[in-house]
Image (cartoon, rainbow, N blue to C red; front, top):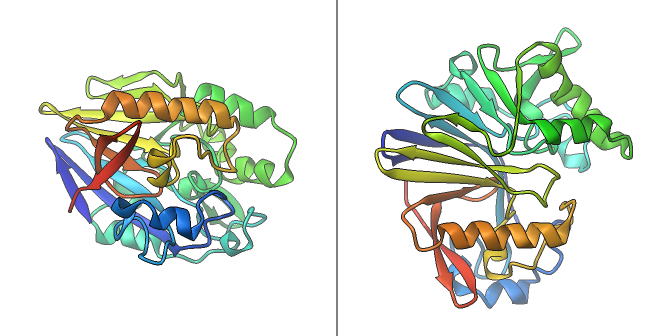
Length: 283
């Protein structure tokens, strides 16, 4: 699936899709609560009240660059927080190539944050070692985000993710550690959106007077637009995450900016009383 914004071509590469089983991440999202928000159906929820989520990457092709945003869970990884994410064998790279983007064509990787389901395909297993997947790319990580997880020793699971999917990129000399408000080019600006992780960042692309905003996990699901205070169990600071959603969505609501989530598809933000909703954009 692909969308056009100015001279940008935006494509979605899905690793895992799921319906339901989301209460571990959004415990307040009961079936009844979901059914009370009619605009979620059918794009973002089922009529029965079950959320639709995906683990996915976004490829942004500009006139001069081929960029991938977030890199899912990855194959052959072990010790993940969910047993179903261990030792995956997904055709992710084949799907990329079929969409016209073989791994060696990617010149930039941007990770909105360094959680397990956003860094996995940074590396691949080769002769028993984790090596960069996108060998011709520079990898953009938030500097404070990287430093936070490098110093974190509170969880063996998070430590393993850092060691197999983040640190090998730095060791290979392919990482650019940047401020979360950095201007990457005339057309690409990072926006600090902390709360889900300590230095989470969103990415704003501009092209021919049009805009696309990649919000990462500022919201895991559009239901958090209707319930801004519903923070996910994975948020490092739930109060800050809710405040970030309010600020970011207020800035881009009722504008022609295409909003794209880490786990849901593109759409346009609209104010809906004191909250927000999103109208899907067809490919």
